[in-house]
Each structure stands twice: as C-alpha cells, then as structure tokens.
Image (cartoon, rainbow over all chains, first blue to last red; front, side, top):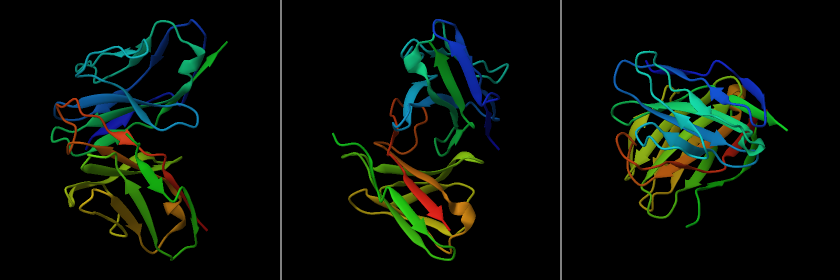
Length: 109
Length: 117
C-alpha cells in the first residue's frame, strides 16, 4: 500500500528564513510525487511535480529515492507563502493520488 | 475557462438519509475524481471517472457511489449517511485519465461541505 507522511502539522518561520516542509513516502514502484497548496479561502492547487523539475514561486523539491523523501524547500520565506501544503503520490498506473496529512506553514513578519 | 464547479456548497443531512453531490468539470475535461477531506483522515481518494466509466475506486464502503454523464458532469451519492461521513467533498477534473508521466494537471473545485447530524 502506498503512504505519504508529512511529520509536521504546523511549521512556523519568520519572513526571510529558509523553509523545508518534509514529505516521506512508502511505495514499492516508481512513484510520481506532487506538492499541492491551499491558500486561505482558495482552492487546492498544484504547486509542483517532481517530473517537471521546475521551481514555482521559489519552491523546489527533489525526489530522493534512497531516503524515500520529497521535501519542499524555499530559501527565503515570504508572508504570502502562508498556506496549507500537501504532499501527494501517484501510483504507476496513474490510478490513485494519495495525500499526506498536510503541513500548515505560517510565515511571520 | 470557468473552473470546476460543485453544487451544493453546503449541505446538512441526518443519519440514514442519502445525498447526491454534483461536479461540473472544466470544459473539455473528461476525467473527474472525487476526494473526501476530514480533519482526522485528511484527503482520501474516492473514485475517478473517465468517459462515463469508473476507472478506479478508493477504499470506501459501497454506500459511496458515483457516475458520470456524457457531458462529463459527475455525481456522487452517499446512501444511509453516518455521522462519520461529515466532510468536505472535493472534485477535481483533468483532460486525461490519471496523471502518470504526463504534464496534465488536476484542477480542484471549491468542495461541498456535508454535515450529518
């Protein structure tokens, strides 16, 4: 069974500080990993996916198959980054998206 | 393009009743997925429909069912409601079934908040 774990429910940092939201997964095949974000009173939306290897809003995430992790990082947090972040895993067949429990990021001024 | 729409936005039912939720995908999208979001269990996949066929189903009891119409609109039905069914039900659409290896993206609706009393 596939599983996604986000160990921190809440992460609070000051503006300008580096941010790392942790995501660990369990899956026997070759997964596709995603980060979704939900800003206050907005819809859940895709932030980035590992196969794109792109940086969105200054965020990056590297898939580490050895450590089965897909941590989300940003060197300098901004107040507008405050949101709920979900890590998600897609199985090989593209049939099921499994979400982690989410981490609420609070960026303080 | 208009985004994914879900109706109704809020719903209050009592135990034992049944409920039908509706989702209209983005125009041109043929895949619709449903998710249940609760504080305790987080976001859980319910099922996905593509071209009126259920492609996959999550680990939910048979009380949860759905269907998709020829215009890609989808409905989700929950029968014999239980208190634990209280949740935010999210619908997401994409142009292709599944997302593996593609650059397609799922777009989420605002959700229907169901409260079971």
